[in-house]
Length: 193
Image (tube, rainbow, N blue to C red):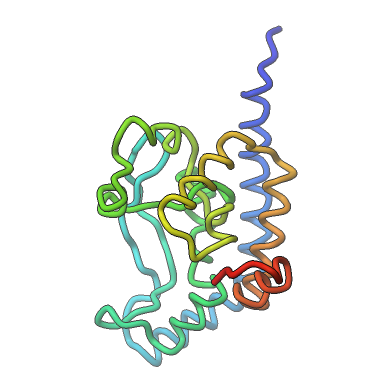
């Protein structure tokens, strides 16, 4: 029987994704329901925002997020949801569907790919893995296209289940306490947004 370490790592990553997605959905079901109720009552628009993003092997998929804007302007609740990252809760459904992973490069639109000029073969490695709800670029935040590519490449080269767990914990803390506060606590000497 042949054993492939690469295949085993991908299987473990998929199990990690399913396990933690189910935990997250269970933990955040009541808060997400309350947020959905506020969105419906206060803003009267759909709770879920849907947008086409580009996934692994450049296959398009529909990403789910909590609605945070009215007429292209963030609402008061929307700013809070974005600040904590709670607007991304519905993406756990994308993970369960297999379109995304919990940890990986940011899911980009086709427009973003063209704007960043990442549609060349030089960036081909980026499309070998599923996009993630969180990842190095998302945790560090406030970076330009060169540092985002650096973090995406670093993740692809060092994919590891322990690293995924650490990034998941940091992201969870950001959801609870806010991105800026956690970044400042973890990296007090860095100027991260």
